[in-house]
Image (cartoon, rainbow, N blue to C red):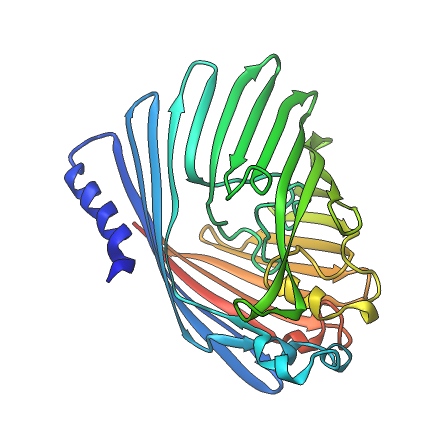
Length: 395
């Protein structure tokens, strides 16, 4: 019963204020079916999601934003990670621990965003659970330590993060952002400072982030909670980002240097370009390198795969290339094909996508994913060919 309390409180507040012009109520209902063929058997999981959004602005200086997500899963709710792995990797899994390597799909009932923004002449203050989006990359964002995108569905919305944020505008010819994400101590809390500005044809930014990277050792169990041993580590990122247009080409680049407390320092960078032809076909290319990942797939181990599948790290393969081609078939239908190539291990995934505005406020999205690669590579056939069908009704 308690899981419905946040949604009930939001709806009750919204109902009480429904006659006010400064209150906005909106959201969507989404039903989604996702499946994959694993070892000659096709499994699927069906998802129902209700998102309820509220925005309240009693004045030009005060804005309150909140949204509640309720998600239920049906079908195959637990996926065994060893089913996706090569025999070489599985050989390193101790038999008593085999049952722990599971990716669960658990129902969610969360207040995903809830924040207050105070606006002044030269700065804004935002406090509460809020969106933190960094970088201009489509699939990979080297300077974003808060979110990890799904390479098959990179535009899907990201979760909110609890933070206090100050945006100073303008600060000379630049804008300044300071962000603090509180944890139990100052040392483990996240801090960010970013300076953004404009040079001819390009928006540029420089940033510094300090955070605690919470990843796990998936070869050892914590005897206290009988789960995998957590290895929190201080992580400092010095990064830069640029995006703009040159000769009708959209161009962007991101770079992040990661200064680590215990593990070896590493860097991430991404560059991309996009172009829309006169006949409305859109094309995009994005290259990404992460030196924390490995370049030889024979060196991939259970930690690499589990951290990737649990979204503790962005990739299992060091060098990758993403390509996308989209074209509007009709005014309400768009067809696209994307390809993801692991340059490091030679594997490849092909993802044809169809989006359809079926009725007013009703969108349908469908994609298939087909993998081409040797066992143990990033996009091997062991990862399973499958697809997704999603219908969303906005209100």
